[in-house]
Image 1 (tube, rainbow, N blue to C red):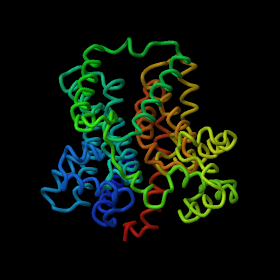
Image 2: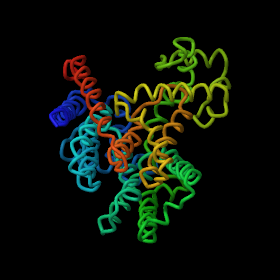
Image 3: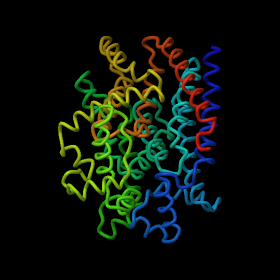
Image 4: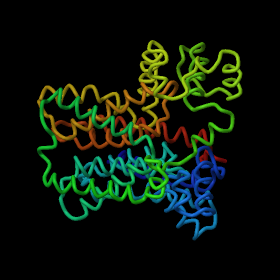
Length: 415
């Protein structure tokens, strides 16, 4: 208990330090935040209808505008929105997920360290609103066993924010369906048949789709029958004509010449421009979808390399829990314990493989954040056998990494 208490309070201190680091000390308009600041500024100058036609992340921009009225600061208003949804996710986990008293400090020690290490949820990007809504929607549909009014209210708004925040909703939805197919293959069981009030859940999701259509009506009115999303990626492409896929693929090509391609950093974009001018556009995939068919052997090798990288880097985020996942599968399969937590383990596995396959170079772990949250819940809430000794070992590992990181950064990374 002394160790658990130490880890719990260390995680709170670490989370607070990372909040100060990302919210106050990080440079304004850092990384993707610049693109969302442009969206918010466009909304302020042109109004809602024109902004939706132009393309913005609707809920993130609207909520950020509320904070802009209070702060008159673009960057801070975006960060307030990111922080708001980070806090909402913490409160949801505390009051909705029903973590047992015995596991409460163990779970939140891991969860706070994960949020602090990810860090990006405090920045002025819509990662927090998208990932938060995805996690809450999944838990509300399959883990939380309540059917009160709040249940349907949460489903409506989490599915609304999930659909309308980022175009990668397609990828995460695909991960869900592939995970469901995997679950079906393994246990031959219809998980949906066990859910109560399925019709009401379906109506709630349909209602969220109606709200999505209403919010996007100005765009539909012009004949563009696609949802409004942030223009940040397209704006970056316009600067020098290099797409994200081309940049990532070429960076990995260069990285493959060193250290077997592991942990290859992004190269200077000027190198990509020079390569394209010498060898033509056909030698680089312009989209991630095009990347999957551009060079199949490259994709297979890259996927294997990415999975190894993920397994190694995951120690920084969730300790050895990802390493325990194969043993978890074996145990559950042996005992024919095909519950919703086993289904969640299938989603985690598919999510990691999908991101490893579609990204040419090192996978940004912010995209694995929801799967890491699911992993914490899957391992820590498992009742059929004791993982207590692994929890203790994991806390020791994460405490050492956290203290080392704070020492290396001299407490604040952004100074």
